[in-house]
Image (cartoon, rainbow, N blue to C red):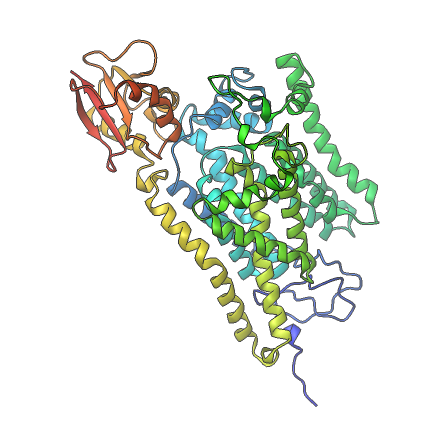
Length: 559
């Protein structure tokens, strides 16, 4: 009589390991916890997975710190549009010097208050939340992947997430999209932790409150995070303590809503300001400077146009093929007999479907959002990464149970899982490495041009004067005059716009970006009125005083 361990026990600790194989395991089946054959409790739910342990949190912390370091090394220039406004709104809070949709995102503005107080108008203030959020999002994705399919799947999900071009490009840019997703991923983890404590109400209630708090904060950071709230309901719904669960989650959400109403009422004399802003969104009303409809190309199109718009556009952009393939794998995940993979696919469908509906599929004449803005795609990228990694893990399980590998050693099956995860990640990661190393949008390839200028002028003991540049660069110039973490200016001088008002005079300085520079696209666009008047370049009386290492930024002295 054979004493061989069943195949499903042998593969328990591989990348394909999942405590949520297909449905609730019956009593006496293997739980798959850390590769040890144990008897599952009767009625164990498929969402249980591996309970979070301190070692898992330590692993996630290491991954989060690695992504934070990556985001810092490959930081982009401080973005002089929306991200600059969020910080300025905190500096002068309450302030209505911007569009209401922006300054009513109190989750962004209030979060910036302590960093403004600590660092002032410095780079650290602009980078703190986006870079931290990137690390937290990656750590959270790892924990979710590890819980359901093991550490290799968790790592694969993080690799797919960070190598996605849209995610990588926005790691440090300061828009609300990544921060809101980091908060939502945190809400998922808190909801799962609450479910782990469902038998102990005293231990569950703090996690339920934390879930609601993060959901409310995420909404105040970016309203579209609410599109995927139903996923939290799927995780938390259960017959026992349903009313208590709902009440504890809703309570902090109501608290955020009350805070929103209070600030809007006291500061802007309209307690329902955000409601009025959101219900008034209509892309069809936007006009160009000449009075033409700005988004005419996406209005009144067949509904199928909006459904396929994002993949069509992705295929036309760098690295878009990998994103579309991930999306296809995610859709396949809907038909896999693994509830955790299906849950991630549901996340994707919620985010993608509702984004498309708001972007024109529901009302083609009056879209509420712009599907061509790539950072609006961020809400469904974590779901695609997790579903794709989970699908590979489940495939390894299936192969191990329905092939000669069922008699193979656990090490061999684990090696197969690792190899398939590596194959899954190779293309996207190789693309991301090439994309990041040569792109002047990032610091290693020239994105730190204003930092180089600061170091050079500080080394010279620059005595200051008037410094002209485009009006977008003028916005962020002072942040680059100070040390990274704030303090006194390292060199004096006041930045002025060259595209309006007085022009540079002898003794003044001018800072110009390389023509069509990708380091600061907004800056290049802002300079176009000046370049149109000077098609041959700067006047001969402007002498080159300094050029950054990649030739992206030039300092001229007017003779």
